[in-house]
Image 1: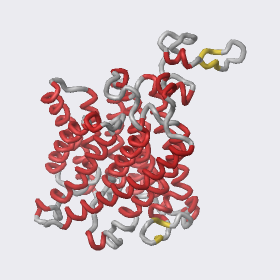
Image 2: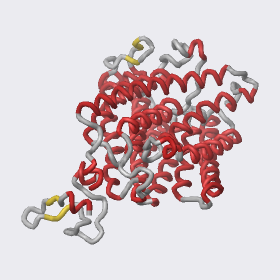
Image 3: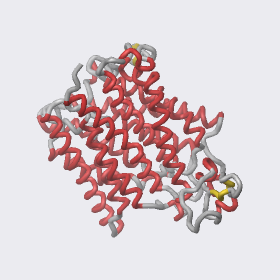
Image 4: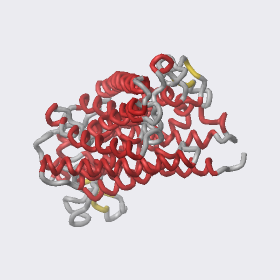
Length: 430
């Protein structure tokens, strides 16, 4: 088959979405302590590596490429290894789908920053993608339970989720909350000023790259110029409005707008517009961004009030704004929304889809997380947490203040072998 503009567009968008996971590594890495930056970035990178392999082997088949298994998931063996689609254009769509699975599981890592065993995370990633992400992707996009002909969608109505409000953001937000509760709070949570973000320029760089990649995230499935144009404008204006709304909220509440707030506002707006990007007007996208920016700015503080340690605000940003974007479609979706004369049918469909995703993800993630926690252990020791997770889990440090051979250096060159002599935990802690 001849390579068309649509094929090229989807391949370019797939590359943009793949870039979002390294971008997330910078975004999250800058928000952690200096002695946890490498571990945080590694959690995103290893999620990319593992999920890509899982997707080729059975993930794509389960998410819609394989034969329907009771509306629950696709048969993992129908297109195992993607051998059955070699020589077809379906490989392009399969690759595009992989990038969504990768960023979804990577998002979860921000909720458990600074305290999760890297080995436990490596176990969690493929299990969660297989048992949680792939089935929900199948339900929404692959003809499963929540689709128009599915067991739930046929009576509740088909929910709109163009690019992943339910599949990606509600899914990751709920999973992050569950893992944060399983692992418990960091030492000094809410009291230790050392837990503040250590590198705000990293955060802003990550947010900028995420915004750039998000045009592929939202626009990759567009097949008409009219649809692509609407998606592009909405993906520009919603995060812009959310950023302004977030920093104004900070100004009113705290007296000062912050760079971290600006970066987080951008992400909140991007999350909110994800399910709605092709189905709301630019005015609707602007209003959606404002609501998401204010709501997430207020929601991120709830962890201190309610006592759950969502380290990097996965719940406050992705779950809250994901719910806002998903439910708002019931009101502002063009043609079918309540404000456009569509009645309550679309709102009901959006509510049902969100509830199903929250309940399923919550239960299955709880089972997976507890199984790992009770067997190999999911949390590092208090001693390792104090010394720094970079040293404890990777025998590295992210920064060298003073050069090789000092206490701040992660390694000392070996004079004979040019290998590395690791510093002690006491030196890393110092």
